[in-house]
Image (cartoon, rainbow, N blue to C red; front, side):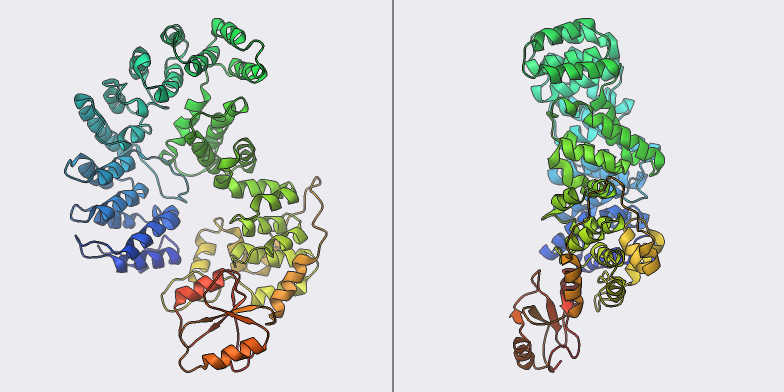
Length: 592
Protein backbone atom coordinates (compact mmCIF):
# COMPACT_ATOMS: atom_id res chain seq x y z
CA UNK A 1 0.00 0.00 0.00
CA UNK A 2 1.56 3.27 -1.14
CA UNK A 3 -0.03 5.82 1.19
CA UNK A 4 2.28 8.39 2.76
CA UNK A 5 1.22 11.17 5.14
CA UNK A 6 2.36 13.80 2.64
CA UNK A 7 -0.05 12.40 0.05
CA UNK A 8 -3.07 12.90 2.34
CA UNK A 9 -3.68 16.52 1.39
CA UNK A 10 -7.47 16.42 1.92
CA UNK A 11 -7.30 15.74 5.66
CA UNK A 12 -5.73 17.90 8.41
CA UNK A 13 -2.05 17.38 9.32
CA UNK A 14 -2.92 15.93 12.74
CA UNK A 15 -5.01 13.23 11.07
CA UNK A 16 -2.05 12.40 8.82
CA UNK A 17 0.20 12.15 11.87
CA UNK A 18 -2.19 9.84 13.69
CA UNK A 19 -2.57 7.67 10.59
CA UNK A 20 1.22 7.43 10.26
CA UNK A 21 1.34 6.20 13.88
CA UNK A 22 -1.10 3.40 13.03
CA UNK A 23 0.87 2.53 9.89
CA UNK A 24 4.12 2.22 11.82
CA UNK A 25 2.56 -0.22 14.27
CA UNK A 26 1.09 -2.50 11.62
CA UNK A 27 2.51 -6.04 11.77
CA UNK A 28 3.41 -8.12 8.76
CA UNK A 29 0.40 -9.63 7.02
CA UNK A 30 -0.88 -12.57 9.03
CA UNK A 31 0.90 -11.65 12.25
CA UNK A 32 -1.00 -10.79 15.40
CA UNK A 33 -1.28 -7.08 16.16
CA UNK A 34 0.03 -5.59 19.37
CA UNK A 35 -2.38 -4.32 21.99
CA UNK A 36 -0.98 -0.86 21.35
CA UNK A 37 -1.95 -1.03 17.69
CA UNK A 38 -5.47 -2.23 18.44
CA UNK A 39 -5.94 0.59 20.94
CA UNK A 40 -4.51 3.20 18.56
CA UNK A 41 -6.62 1.90 15.70
CA UNK A 42 -9.84 1.99 17.71
CA UNK A 43 -9.04 5.51 18.93
CA UNK A 44 -8.24 6.65 15.42
CA UNK A 45 -11.54 5.37 14.09
CA UNK A 46 -13.43 6.90 16.98
CA UNK A 47 -11.79 10.33 16.85
CA UNK A 48 -10.77 10.73 13.20
CA UNK A 49 -13.54 8.87 11.39
CA UNK A 50 -15.33 12.12 10.47
CA UNK A 51 -12.40 13.02 8.23
CA UNK A 52 -11.76 9.68 6.52
CA UNK A 53 -14.21 10.05 3.66
CA UNK A 54 -12.47 13.25 2.61
CA UNK A 55 -9.46 11.20 1.45
CA UNK A 56 -10.64 8.37 -0.88
CA UNK A 57 -7.16 6.85 -1.03
CA UNK A 58 -7.51 5.77 2.60
CA UNK A 59 -9.93 3.08 1.45
CA UNK A 60 -6.86 1.07 0.45
CA UNK A 61 -5.83 0.79 4.10
CA UNK A 62 -9.24 -0.60 5.00
CA UNK A 63 -8.95 -3.15 2.20
CA UNK A 64 -5.53 -4.13 3.51
CA UNK A 65 -6.97 -4.71 6.98
CA UNK A 66 -9.84 -6.72 5.53
CA UNK A 67 -7.52 -9.05 3.62
CA UNK A 68 -8.22 -12.75 4.27
CA UNK A 69 -4.62 -13.26 5.40
CA UNK A 70 -5.03 -10.86 8.33
CA UNK A 71 -6.03 -11.96 11.82
CA UNK A 72 -9.75 -11.60 12.67
CA UNK A 73 -9.31 -8.51 14.90
CA UNK A 74 -7.76 -6.55 12.04
CA UNK A 75 -10.25 -7.84 9.48
CA UNK A 76 -13.14 -6.67 11.65
CA UNK A 77 -11.55 -3.24 12.02
CA UNK A 78 -11.06 -3.18 8.27
CA UNK A 79 -14.79 -3.64 7.74
CA UNK A 80 -15.45 -0.80 10.19
CA UNK A 81 -12.92 1.39 8.36
CA UNK A 82 -14.66 0.83 5.03
CA UNK A 83 -17.89 2.30 6.39
CA UNK A 84 -16.42 5.63 5.26
CA UNK A 85 -15.73 4.42 1.70
CA UNK A 86 -18.83 3.14 -0.11
CA UNK A 87 -17.54 2.30 -3.59
CA UNK A 88 -18.06 -0.58 -5.98
CA UNK A 89 -14.64 -2.04 -5.14
CA UNK A 90 -15.22 -1.88 -1.36
CA UNK A 91 -18.69 -3.41 -1.78
CA UNK A 92 -17.12 -6.26 -3.75
CA UNK A 93 -14.51 -6.83 -1.05
CA UNK A 94 -17.08 -6.75 1.75
CA UNK A 95 -19.38 -9.03 -0.22
CA UNK A 96 -16.63 -11.63 -0.51
CA UNK A 97 -16.20 -11.59 3.27
CA UNK A 98 -19.95 -11.72 3.95
CA UNK A 99 -20.35 -14.74 1.67
CA UNK A 100 -17.33 -16.59 3.07
CA UNK A 101 -18.75 -19.16 5.47
CA UNK A 102 -15.23 -20.01 6.66
CA UNK A 103 -14.61 -16.47 7.89
CA UNK A 104 -15.18 -15.67 11.58
CA UNK A 105 -18.74 -14.63 12.39
CA UNK A 106 -17.64 -11.32 13.92
CA UNK A 107 -15.87 -10.39 10.69
CA UNK A 108 -18.81 -11.43 8.50
CA UNK A 109 -21.29 -9.61 10.73
CA UNK A 110 -19.29 -6.39 10.50
CA UNK A 111 -18.98 -6.76 6.73
CA UNK A 112 -22.75 -7.15 6.43
CA UNK A 113 -23.40 -4.16 8.67
CA UNK A 114 -21.06 -2.01 6.57
CA UNK A 115 -22.86 -3.10 3.40
CA UNK A 116 -26.11 -1.82 4.84
CA UNK A 117 -25.02 1.22 6.83
CA UNK A 118 -26.03 4.38 4.92
CA UNK A 119 -25.96 6.96 7.73
CA UNK A 120 -23.76 10.03 7.48
CA UNK A 121 -23.79 11.00 11.16
CA UNK A 122 -20.63 12.98 12.03
CA UNK A 123 -18.76 12.75 8.71
CA UNK A 124 -17.67 16.22 7.59
CA UNK A 125 -17.84 15.56 3.89
CA UNK A 126 -17.02 13.24 1.02
CA UNK A 127 -19.14 10.36 2.30
CA UNK A 128 -21.79 9.55 -0.29
CA UNK A 129 -23.61 6.36 -1.24
CA UNK A 130 -24.30 6.72 -4.95
CA UNK A 131 -27.29 4.88 -6.49
CA UNK A 132 -24.95 2.45 -8.25
CA UNK A 133 -23.17 1.50 -5.03
CA UNK A 134 -26.45 1.22 -3.13
CA UNK A 135 -27.77 -1.15 -5.80
CA UNK A 136 -24.62 -3.29 -5.69
CA UNK A 137 -24.76 -3.59 -1.89
CA UNK A 138 -28.48 -4.40 -1.94
CA UNK A 139 -27.88 -7.31 -4.30
CA UNK A 140 -25.51 -8.82 -1.75
CA UNK A 141 -27.90 -8.25 1.16
CA UNK A 142 -30.73 -9.82 -0.82
CA UNK A 143 -28.62 -12.85 -1.68
CA UNK A 144 -27.78 -13.44 1.98
CA UNK A 145 -31.40 -12.93 3.02
CA UNK A 146 -32.62 -15.44 0.44
CA UNK A 147 -30.06 -18.00 1.63
CA UNK A 148 -31.33 -17.62 5.20
CA UNK A 149 -34.94 -17.81 4.01
CA UNK A 150 -34.22 -21.22 2.48
CA UNK A 151 -32.69 -22.60 5.67
CA UNK A 152 -35.21 -20.87 7.97
CA UNK A 153 -32.44 -19.51 10.16
CA UNK A 154 -30.75 -16.12 10.43
CA UNK A 155 -27.05 -16.83 10.11
CA UNK A 156 -25.70 -13.32 10.69
CA UNK A 157 -27.44 -11.33 13.41
CA UNK A 158 -26.47 -8.01 11.80
CA UNK A 159 -28.10 -8.91 8.48
CA UNK A 160 -31.71 -7.95 9.37
CA UNK A 161 -30.50 -4.77 11.05
CA UNK A 162 -28.44 -3.83 8.00
CA UNK A 163 -31.50 -4.49 5.83
CA UNK A 164 -33.37 -1.73 7.66
CA UNK A 165 -31.40 0.73 5.50
CA UNK A 166 -32.31 -0.90 2.18
CA UNK A 167 -35.16 0.44 0.06
CA UNK A 168 -34.95 -1.59 -3.13
CA UNK A 169 -37.17 -4.18 -4.74
CA UNK A 170 -34.46 -6.85 -4.69
CA UNK A 171 -34.27 -6.66 -0.88
CA UNK A 172 -38.04 -6.42 -0.49
CA UNK A 173 -38.48 -9.62 -2.56
CA UNK A 174 -36.01 -11.47 -0.34
CA UNK A 175 -37.73 -10.28 2.84
CA UNK A 176 -41.14 -11.27 1.46
CA UNK A 177 -40.00 -14.90 1.31
CA UNK A 178 -39.72 -15.08 5.12
CA UNK A 179 -41.31 -12.03 6.78
CA UNK A 180 -41.59 -13.70 10.17
CA UNK A 181 -37.96 -14.81 10.14
CA UNK A 182 -36.82 -11.31 9.23
CA UNK A 183 -39.05 -9.39 11.62
CA UNK A 184 -36.02 -7.46 12.86
CA UNK A 185 -35.50 -6.04 9.36
CA UNK A 186 -38.92 -4.39 9.18
CA UNK A 187 -38.84 -0.75 10.11
CA UNK A 188 -39.21 2.09 7.59
CA UNK A 189 -38.90 0.66 4.06
CA UNK A 190 -41.29 -1.68 2.23
CA UNK A 191 -43.31 -1.94 -0.97
CA UNK A 192 -46.90 -3.15 -1.28
CA UNK A 193 -46.12 -6.89 -1.67
CA UNK A 194 -43.85 -6.89 1.40
CA UNK A 195 -46.37 -4.92 3.46
CA UNK A 196 -49.14 -7.32 2.42
CA UNK A 197 -46.99 -10.29 3.44
CA UNK A 198 -46.40 -8.65 6.82
CA UNK A 199 -50.09 -8.05 7.24
CA UNK A 200 -50.85 -11.69 6.45
CA UNK A 201 -48.29 -12.97 8.97
CA UNK A 202 -48.77 -10.28 11.62
CA UNK A 203 -50.07 -12.65 14.34
CA UNK A 204 -46.99 -14.87 13.91
CA UNK A 205 -44.51 -12.01 14.32
CA UNK A 206 -42.64 -11.70 17.58
CA UNK A 207 -44.11 -9.08 19.92
CA UNK A 208 -40.82 -7.12 19.85
CA UNK A 209 -41.25 -6.58 16.09
CA UNK A 210 -45.02 -6.26 15.77
CA UNK A 211 -45.38 -2.57 16.55
CA UNK A 212 -42.78 -1.59 13.97
CA UNK A 213 -44.55 -3.76 11.43
CA UNK A 214 -47.93 -2.19 12.21
CA UNK A 215 -46.47 1.24 11.44
CA UNK A 216 -44.78 0.00 8.28
CA UNK A 217 -47.91 -1.73 6.97
CA UNK A 218 -50.07 1.37 7.33
CA UNK A 219 -47.39 3.75 6.05
CA UNK A 220 -47.05 1.58 2.93
CA UNK A 221 -50.62 0.43 2.22
CA UNK A 222 -52.56 3.31 3.73
CA UNK A 223 -56.31 3.28 4.36
CA UNK A 224 -56.85 0.09 2.35
CA UNK A 225 -55.06 -1.90 5.07
CA UNK A 226 -57.07 -0.58 8.01
CA UNK A 227 -59.96 -3.15 8.06
CA UNK A 228 -57.69 -6.17 7.67
CA UNK A 229 -55.26 -4.81 10.24
CA UNK A 230 -58.00 -4.32 12.83
CA UNK A 231 -59.21 -7.85 12.21
CA UNK A 232 -55.73 -9.30 12.64
CA UNK A 233 -55.26 -7.45 15.91
CA UNK A 234 -58.66 -8.07 17.43
CA UNK A 235 -57.18 -10.26 20.14
CA UNK A 236 -53.67 -8.79 20.14
CA UNK A 237 -51.79 -7.27 23.07
CA UNK A 238 -53.12 -3.95 24.30
CA UNK A 239 -50.16 -1.83 23.11
CA UNK A 240 -50.24 -3.27 19.57
CA UNK A 241 -53.98 -2.87 19.27
CA UNK A 242 -53.90 0.72 20.54
CA UNK A 243 -51.04 1.61 18.19
CA UNK A 244 -53.07 0.33 15.24
CA UNK A 245 -56.11 2.32 16.34
CA UNK A 246 -54.15 5.55 16.63
CA UNK A 247 -52.59 5.12 13.19
CA UNK A 248 -55.94 4.14 11.70
CA UNK A 249 -57.23 7.54 12.76
CA UNK A 250 -54.62 9.09 10.46
CA UNK A 251 -56.31 7.29 7.59
CA UNK A 252 -59.81 8.47 8.39
CA UNK A 253 -61.18 5.49 10.33
CA UNK A 254 -64.09 6.86 12.42
CA UNK A 255 -64.55 3.51 14.17
CA UNK A 256 -60.98 3.73 15.46
CA UNK A 257 -61.72 7.12 17.01
CA UNK A 258 -64.80 5.75 18.75
CA UNK A 259 -62.85 2.77 20.01
CA UNK A 260 -60.10 5.01 21.42
CA UNK A 261 -62.61 7.25 23.19
CA UNK A 262 -64.21 4.21 24.81
CA UNK A 263 -60.81 2.81 25.76
CA UNK A 264 -59.65 5.96 27.55
CA UNK A 265 -62.92 7.21 28.93
CA UNK A 266 -62.38 8.13 32.56
CA UNK A 267 -58.67 7.26 32.53
CA UNK A 268 -56.29 9.64 34.30
CA UNK A 269 -54.08 9.78 31.20
CA UNK A 270 -56.98 10.23 28.78
CA UNK A 271 -56.01 13.80 27.90
CA UNK A 272 -52.61 12.72 26.57
CA UNK A 273 -53.99 9.93 24.42
CA UNK A 274 -56.84 12.02 23.10
CA UNK A 275 -54.22 14.61 22.24
CA UNK A 276 -52.38 12.03 20.19
CA UNK A 277 -55.62 11.12 18.44
CA UNK A 278 -56.13 14.77 17.55
CA UNK A 279 -52.58 14.94 16.20
CA UNK A 280 -53.27 12.06 13.82
CA UNK A 281 -56.51 13.70 12.69
CA UNK A 282 -54.55 16.85 11.83
CA UNK A 283 -51.83 14.92 9.96
CA UNK A 284 -53.82 12.78 7.59
CA UNK A 285 -51.96 9.88 6.03
CA UNK A 286 -48.77 10.42 8.06
CA UNK A 287 -46.99 7.76 10.11
CA UNK A 288 -44.33 10.08 11.53
CA UNK A 289 -41.93 7.52 12.97
CA UNK A 290 -41.69 5.66 9.66
CA UNK A 291 -41.29 8.87 7.67
CA UNK A 292 -38.58 10.15 10.00
CA UNK A 293 -36.64 6.89 9.96
CA UNK A 294 -36.82 6.76 6.16
CA UNK A 295 -34.62 9.86 6.17
CA UNK A 296 -32.45 9.08 9.22
CA UNK A 297 -31.46 5.66 7.87
CA UNK A 298 -30.09 6.97 4.56
CA UNK A 299 -28.54 10.38 5.23
CA UNK A 300 -25.36 9.25 3.46
CA UNK A 301 -27.30 8.84 0.20
CA UNK A 302 -27.59 12.62 -0.09
CA UNK A 303 -24.69 15.11 -0.28
CA UNK A 304 -24.21 17.60 2.53
CA UNK A 305 -25.98 20.88 2.04
CA UNK A 306 -29.18 22.80 2.64
CA UNK A 307 -31.39 20.07 1.19
CA UNK A 308 -29.99 17.45 3.58
CA UNK A 309 -30.30 19.81 6.55
CA UNK A 310 -33.94 20.43 5.68
CA UNK A 311 -34.61 16.70 5.32
CA UNK A 312 -32.94 16.01 8.68
CA UNK A 313 -34.99 18.76 10.28
CA UNK A 314 -38.22 17.19 9.06
CA UNK A 315 -37.00 13.76 10.21
CA UNK A 316 -36.22 15.16 13.67
CA UNK A 317 -39.70 16.65 13.88
CA UNK A 318 -41.24 13.35 12.79
CA UNK A 319 -39.26 11.28 15.27
CA UNK A 320 -40.24 13.63 18.09
CA UNK A 321 -43.86 14.20 17.09
CA UNK A 322 -45.49 11.50 19.20
CA UNK A 323 -43.24 11.85 22.24
CA UNK A 324 -45.47 14.70 23.39
CA UNK A 325 -47.96 11.98 24.34
CA UNK A 326 -45.77 9.02 25.35
CA UNK A 327 -42.15 7.90 25.29
CA UNK A 328 -40.90 5.81 22.41
CA UNK A 329 -40.94 2.15 23.33
CA UNK A 330 -37.79 1.59 21.23
CA UNK A 331 -34.88 3.47 22.81
CA UNK A 332 -32.81 3.50 19.61
CA UNK A 333 -35.31 5.96 18.11
CA UNK A 334 -33.94 8.65 20.40
CA UNK A 335 -30.41 8.12 19.10
CA UNK A 336 -31.59 8.44 15.50
CA UNK A 337 -33.62 11.49 16.49
CA UNK A 338 -30.47 13.03 17.97
CA UNK A 339 -28.47 12.41 14.80
CA UNK A 340 -31.29 13.90 12.74
CA UNK A 341 -31.12 17.00 14.94
CA UNK A 342 -27.38 17.20 14.40
CA UNK A 343 -27.88 16.78 10.69
CA UNK A 344 -30.37 19.65 10.71
CA UNK A 345 -27.83 21.91 12.48
CA UNK A 346 -30.78 23.51 14.26
CA UNK A 347 -30.25 24.61 17.90
CA UNK A 348 -33.98 24.94 18.58
CA UNK A 349 -34.55 21.31 17.64
CA UNK A 350 -31.73 20.35 20.01
CA UNK A 351 -33.60 22.14 22.77
CA UNK A 352 -36.76 20.16 21.99
CA UNK A 353 -34.91 16.85 22.17
CA UNK A 354 -33.05 17.78 25.36
CA UNK A 355 -36.26 18.73 27.13
CA UNK A 356 -38.15 15.68 25.88
CA UNK A 357 -35.44 13.10 26.44
CA UNK A 358 -32.59 14.36 28.67
CA UNK A 359 -30.71 11.07 28.23
CA UNK A 360 -30.08 12.01 24.57
CA UNK A 361 -28.87 15.52 25.40
CA UNK A 362 -25.12 14.68 25.28
CA UNK A 363 -25.40 13.88 21.56
CA UNK A 364 -26.74 17.36 20.82
CA UNK A 365 -25.16 19.28 23.69
CA UNK A 366 -23.24 21.78 21.58
CA UNK A 367 -26.33 22.71 19.60
CA UNK A 368 -28.26 22.95 22.87
CA UNK A 369 -25.59 25.20 24.39
CA UNK A 370 -25.67 27.32 21.26
CA UNK A 371 -29.43 27.74 21.58
CA UNK A 372 -29.24 28.72 25.24
CA UNK A 373 -26.31 31.11 24.79
CA UNK A 374 -27.96 32.87 21.86
CA UNK A 375 -31.06 33.39 24.00
CA UNK A 376 -28.99 34.61 26.95
CA UNK A 377 -29.90 31.75 29.29
CA UNK A 378 -26.77 32.06 31.42
CA UNK A 379 -27.80 29.91 34.38
CA UNK A 380 -29.06 27.12 32.14
CA UNK A 381 -25.80 27.09 30.20
CA UNK A 382 -23.79 26.88 33.40
CA UNK A 383 -25.96 24.11 34.81
CA UNK A 384 -25.91 22.16 31.56
CA UNK A 385 -22.14 21.87 31.29
CA UNK A 386 -21.35 21.46 34.97
CA UNK A 387 -19.05 18.45 35.16
CA UNK A 388 -19.38 17.85 31.39
CA UNK A 389 -16.75 18.04 28.67
CA UNK A 390 -18.22 21.03 26.84
CA UNK A 391 -17.57 23.79 29.37
CA UNK A 392 -14.97 25.35 27.08
CA UNK A 393 -17.42 25.54 24.18
CA UNK A 394 -20.11 26.97 26.46
CA UNK A 395 -17.75 29.63 27.79
CA UNK A 396 -16.88 30.63 24.23
CA UNK A 397 -20.55 30.94 23.25
CA UNK A 398 -21.31 33.09 26.30
CA UNK A 399 -18.42 35.38 25.39
CA UNK A 400 -19.62 35.62 21.80
CA UNK A 401 -23.21 36.34 22.83
CA UNK A 402 -22.57 39.23 25.18
CA UNK A 403 -22.10 37.65 28.58
CA UNK A 404 -18.34 38.08 29.19
CA UNK A 405 -18.28 37.80 32.99
CA UNK A 406 -20.26 34.57 32.90
CA UNK A 407 -17.94 33.34 30.16
CA UNK A 408 -14.81 34.09 32.19
CA UNK A 409 -16.27 32.49 35.31
CA UNK A 410 -17.12 29.33 33.36
CA UNK A 411 -13.72 29.33 31.66
CA UNK A 412 -12.05 29.42 35.07
CA UNK A 413 -13.64 26.08 35.96
CA UNK A 414 -11.96 24.18 33.14
CA UNK A 415 -8.26 23.48 33.00
CA UNK A 416 -8.36 22.10 29.48
CA UNK A 417 -6.40 24.47 27.26
CA UNK A 418 -8.53 24.26 24.12
CA UNK A 419 -9.03 26.86 21.39
CA UNK A 420 -12.57 27.44 22.69
CA UNK A 421 -11.56 28.20 26.28
CA UNK A 422 -8.66 30.40 25.20
CA UNK A 423 -10.92 32.30 22.79
CA UNK A 424 -13.50 32.63 25.58
CA UNK A 425 -10.90 34.16 27.93
CA UNK A 426 -9.58 36.59 25.33
CA UNK A 427 -12.95 37.71 23.99
CA UNK A 428 -14.38 37.80 27.52
CA UNK A 429 -11.58 40.11 28.68
CA UNK A 430 -12.02 42.49 25.77
CA UNK A 431 -15.78 42.63 26.29
CA UNK A 432 -15.44 43.02 30.07
CA UNK A 433 -13.29 46.14 29.67
CA UNK A 434 -9.96 44.41 30.30
CA UNK A 435 -8.38 44.70 26.88
CA UNK A 436 -4.97 44.72 28.58
CA UNK A 437 -5.54 41.16 29.80
CA UNK A 438 -6.90 40.12 26.41
CA UNK A 439 -3.75 41.41 24.69
CA UNK A 440 -1.52 39.54 27.11
CA UNK A 441 -3.47 36.32 26.63
CA UNK A 442 -3.02 36.65 22.87
CA UNK A 443 0.73 36.88 23.36
CA UNK A 444 1.34 34.57 26.30
CA UNK A 445 -1.39 31.97 26.70
CA UNK A 446 -2.50 30.49 23.39
CA UNK A 447 -3.58 26.85 23.18
CA UNK A 448 -1.13 24.10 22.25
CA UNK A 449 -0.99 23.04 18.64
CA UNK A 450 -1.91 19.52 17.56
CA UNK A 451 0.93 17.11 17.02
CA UNK A 452 2.03 16.70 13.41
CA UNK A 453 5.37 14.99 14.08
CA UNK A 454 6.86 12.86 16.78
CA UNK A 455 9.75 15.10 17.79
CA UNK A 456 8.27 18.44 18.87
CA UNK A 457 5.10 20.30 19.71
CA UNK A 458 4.84 23.27 17.34
CA UNK A 459 3.94 26.73 18.56
CA UNK A 460 0.39 27.91 17.94
CA UNK A 461 -0.75 28.14 15.23
CA UNK A 462 0.95 25.03 13.91
CA UNK A 463 0.50 23.34 10.54
CA UNK A 464 -2.72 21.64 11.66
CA UNK A 465 -4.33 24.84 12.90
CA UNK A 466 -3.37 26.81 9.79
CA UNK A 467 -4.78 24.03 7.58
CA UNK A 468 -8.04 23.98 9.51
CA UNK A 469 -8.44 27.76 9.33
CA UNK A 470 -7.89 27.69 5.57
CA UNK A 471 -9.73 24.52 4.52
CA UNK A 472 -12.38 23.95 7.22
CA UNK A 473 -12.95 27.29 8.97
CA UNK A 474 -16.46 26.45 10.16
CA UNK A 475 -15.54 23.23 11.96
CA UNK A 476 -14.02 25.11 14.91
CA UNK A 477 -14.78 28.86 14.76
CA UNK A 478 -12.75 29.57 17.90
CA UNK A 479 -9.64 27.97 16.45
CA UNK A 480 -10.12 29.78 13.13
CA UNK A 481 -10.46 33.14 14.86
CA UNK A 482 -7.34 32.55 16.99
CA UNK A 483 -5.33 31.67 13.89
CA UNK A 484 -6.54 34.77 12.06
CA UNK A 485 -5.84 37.08 14.99
CA UNK A 486 -7.45 39.56 17.36
CA UNK A 487 -9.64 41.32 14.82
CA UNK A 488 -11.17 38.05 13.61
CA UNK A 489 -11.92 37.09 17.20
CA UNK A 490 -13.54 40.45 17.99
CA UNK A 491 -15.67 40.21 14.84
CA UNK A 492 -17.41 37.18 16.38
CA UNK A 493 -18.90 39.30 19.16
CA UNK A 494 -22.69 39.72 19.14
CA UNK A 495 -24.97 41.80 21.29
CA UNK A 496 -26.91 39.93 23.94
CA UNK A 497 -30.60 39.52 23.10
CA UNK A 498 -33.10 41.76 24.87
CA UNK A 499 -34.53 38.87 26.88
CA UNK A 500 -31.10 37.70 28.06
CA UNK A 501 -30.46 37.09 31.74
CA UNK A 502 -28.15 39.50 33.51
CA UNK A 503 -24.46 38.78 33.28
CA UNK A 504 -22.73 37.18 36.25
CA UNK A 505 -22.21 39.93 38.88
CA UNK A 506 -18.75 38.73 39.82
CA UNK A 507 -15.12 39.54 39.02
CA UNK A 508 -13.91 36.06 39.93
CA UNK A 509 -13.42 35.16 36.29
CA UNK A 510 -11.28 38.24 35.69
CA UNK A 511 -9.29 37.53 38.83
CA UNK A 512 -8.60 33.99 37.60
CA UNK A 513 -7.08 35.48 34.44
CA UNK A 514 -4.93 37.84 36.48
CA UNK A 515 -3.75 34.92 38.60
CA UNK A 516 -3.02 32.80 35.52
CA UNK A 517 -0.97 35.55 33.88
CA UNK A 518 0.83 36.40 37.14
CA UNK A 519 2.39 32.90 37.12
CA UNK A 520 3.32 32.88 40.78
CA UNK A 521 4.64 29.66 42.34
CA UNK A 522 3.32 29.82 45.92
CA UNK A 523 0.62 27.22 46.63
CA UNK A 524 0.94 25.61 43.20
CA UNK A 525 1.92 22.15 41.97
CA UNK A 526 4.84 21.29 39.69
CA UNK A 527 5.58 18.16 37.68
CA UNK A 528 9.15 17.30 36.64
CA UNK A 529 8.72 16.06 33.08
CA UNK A 530 11.23 13.84 31.30
CA UNK A 531 14.85 12.96 31.98
CA UNK A 532 17.26 15.18 33.89
CA UNK A 533 20.89 14.46 32.96
CA UNK A 534 22.74 17.76 32.69
CA UNK A 535 20.23 19.62 34.86
CA UNK A 536 20.24 19.10 38.62
CA UNK A 537 16.85 17.70 39.46
CA UNK A 538 17.55 17.78 43.20
CA UNK A 539 18.58 21.42 43.01
CA UNK A 540 15.49 22.35 41.00
CA UNK A 541 13.29 20.39 43.38
CA UNK A 542 14.72 22.33 46.32
CA UNK A 543 14.17 25.62 44.46
CA UNK A 544 10.56 24.72 43.69
CA UNK A 545 9.91 23.86 47.35
CA UNK A 546 11.61 27.05 48.49
CA UNK A 547 9.33 29.06 46.17
CA UNK A 548 6.28 27.60 47.91
CA UNK A 549 5.25 25.02 45.31
CA UNK A 550 4.70 21.28 45.74
CA UNK A 551 6.02 18.54 43.46
CA UNK A 552 3.59 16.00 42.01
CA UNK A 553 4.75 12.68 40.62
CA UNK A 554 2.65 12.39 37.49
CA UNK A 555 1.17 14.54 34.69
CA UNK A 556 -2.11 14.75 36.55
CA UNK A 557 -4.98 17.03 35.57
CA UNK A 558 -5.06 20.29 37.58
CA UNK A 559 -1.26 20.40 37.84
CA UNK A 560 -0.27 24.07 37.59
CA UNK A 561 3.22 23.87 36.05
CA UNK A 562 5.68 21.46 34.56
CA UNK A 563 9.43 21.74 34.49
CA UNK A 564 10.94 20.08 31.44
CA UNK A 565 14.15 18.13 31.72
CA UNK A 566 16.81 17.58 29.08
CA UNK A 567 14.47 15.30 27.17
CA UNK A 568 10.80 14.39 27.34
CA UNK A 569 8.30 12.50 25.19
CA UNK A 570 6.49 14.97 22.99
CA UNK A 571 3.19 13.19 23.72
CA UNK A 572 3.70 13.89 27.44
CA UNK A 573 4.30 17.56 26.75
CA UNK A 574 1.20 17.67 24.55
CA UNK A 575 -0.90 16.06 27.29
CA UNK A 576 0.35 18.54 29.88
CA UNK A 577 -0.28 21.54 27.65
CA UNK A 578 -3.77 20.40 26.69
CA UNK A 579 -4.82 20.01 30.29
CA UNK A 580 -3.73 23.57 30.99
CA UNK A 581 -0.43 22.83 32.72
CA UNK A 582 2.03 25.62 31.93
CA UNK A 583 5.75 25.26 31.34
CA UNK A 584 8.07 26.99 33.77
CA UNK A 585 10.37 29.29 31.88
CA UNK A 586 13.96 30.32 32.43
CA UNK A 587 14.25 32.64 35.39
CA UNK A 588 10.99 31.58 37.04
CA UNK A 589 12.77 29.01 39.22
CA UNK A 590 16.18 29.43 40.74
CA UNK A 591 18.69 27.42 38.71
CA UNK A 592 16.50 27.03 35.61
